[in-house]
Length: 385
Image 1 (cartoon, rainbow, N blue to C red):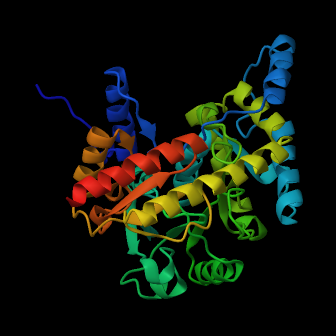
Image 2: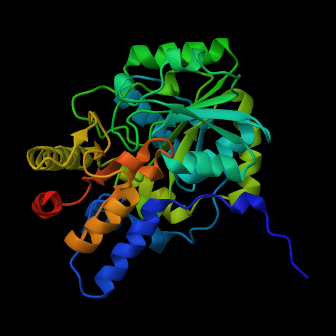
């Protein structure tokens, strides 16, 4: 007898994790691999956070918190919006989540029903569409190219051939690092409000920008904001993020969080509370990312690696390598095998045109960026021969 297997679980893999596994296999065999595939800071939380956590562990049993998160953490996040954006956010509108991944799941479950259509830019973060598909929602890909800096515009929305129920807007974007201006953000938000489209603002890379100011959905009462401590605060493995939730969704998200997760990890919530006090350290790290960005851009441009998207923020370079390949999956596999540099194929982010693109992360050390530039330059030179 054949047992039923749900179609919900038959989503596409997150290819960057497959690349990470292949790189790990090479390392186990003794190779020295430079990791540019995963968007993960190489540095963790500052020592001051660890010391505070040690005291907390000694003083507390670290049991469950309420489903929406520690009051101290929500108050700290609210202060972060006042300090960083000049926007007042009520702590009661904040829901702490088990990473931004859980935040997206809660937002999608609360805002949409099975069969609803949620749009996003392509290229974009692959887990958007994979999570949507696993929840029986339709992911609508909007082809966003270099002419709009790989971002969705109002004109894109007006040109859709069928209505949508939701829109995900990411600025800075993964994989391109491009951003929308405050004016563009408000134009899109106005369009969504007028047309009954729920806007979800992915702000996970806020804080990691290179001369551009971020526009936050926290200033709009009908926008769902998703953020995380993983990127700017260097806490990927702690799995803690947050939502800013419009009033009409607060109770449903609270109930969903209670049943799906009970509460985010308490130790991670305390770590995040303390990490909010270390923004001077994090800003210094952003300056390091900027240095890494210049090393890769200058070195790989000179080597003829490809054409790069404008990298306004985040810690990624999205590169058109169509002059070298029409199969980014094989291209990245060859680079990993020959040069021992792990990069991510564009098909992970863009099933339409991604065969001509790759993504490189510059979240690692400066020494790694220099080594990767040298190895990739040699590989491209040999590949041309």
